[in-house]
Length: 287
Image 1 (tube, rainbow, N blue to C red):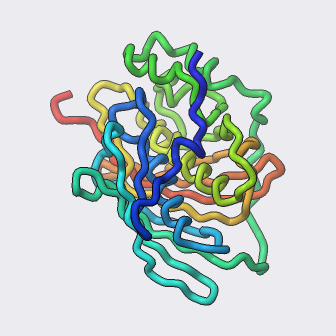
Image 2 (tube, one colour; image 1 turned 90 degrees about the vertical axis):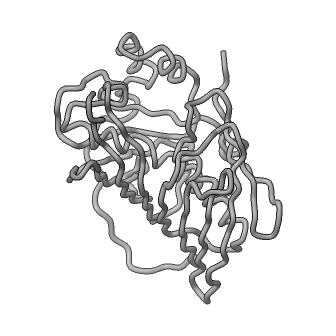
């Protein structure tokens, strides 16, 4: 049986020059690079130029599909090093063209005012089916290539109430989703790497939440979907080898785009990060 990816190894970068890094993608996966991978590697490239500060926010745009067969170059612009905040811009390049760009801000760790929204009351991860169990219920509805890809061990474990993301329940429903997620492989002690892998996982399940009110899923014939932009705010550190609740809602879809908001909580109810994303979501004409 295949082993799941070890994400710190998958995301590792090679330094080529002072502000230039090279990353690669795992082979045998989908035909385009997973958005969470390029978010995480870009954040990791920025961290390679920052000392003793933690990222508190990032904002990024997906510009072109990434090709997993060739390396990605990450060019870091050291925009500003201030007394409290540090700002970086990262451009991801393939074949001489931008495929993605990211702006991130880092802050000296300090104390301050503290409040948060409460975590929703939902069943815990031990009371929900595993991703493999959810997928098994709808595997016969998947195209063979998708079924093969989804059957491999994954680096992020997910547990939710239903199999909507796999196309199991495609009746129109409320644009909300609650899913428990965690990294399957050991991350280590570096809090920056836990944050990087949390950013990797933050791109999961979002657009499928925006699809719920319309009764469509990834394999719906004629559906065209892709992440367009992504923003994330880190509120507090956490151990991503432990379960986190990823609660999402989609307040709007219009103009061929779906908008989703997300919040990530530890099991004790601590809000550790917030997310927002807009993605392409439309039916091809003629389908």
